[in-house]
Image (cartoon, rainbow, N blue to C red; front, side, top):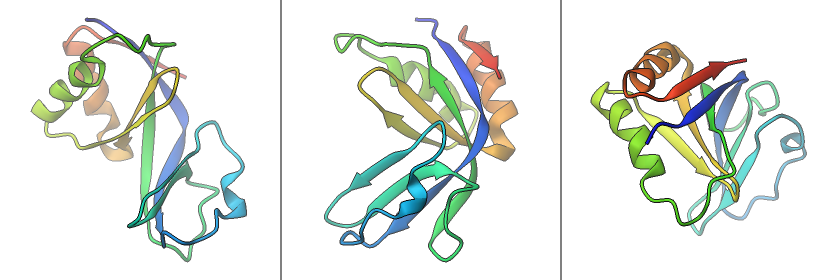
Length: 127
């Protein structure tokens, strides 16, 4: 299954806070924001420029957005994207929303990630 993805122009940070922490005010801006709370952590994906400097964050990441909306009955969407990236030894951080999926790739590997996806027949548009 060939998918169309778009590379977002911003860079992102993946941050980790205490699971009981309040959601910080700096999480209100940007084209992509994801907040996930579990019993072990509060994870925040936000624009790199918004992330506080005094908390643990991994950066810089770039995001590839799968064109959607994707129907919930579709099977293998992430597998069709992550398999070629894994074969190219490229680590990802995946986020799923109601409408679509996002793959975050370390900025240093984004060119190789785009090449690997295109080699498998996916279309990658760059902003």
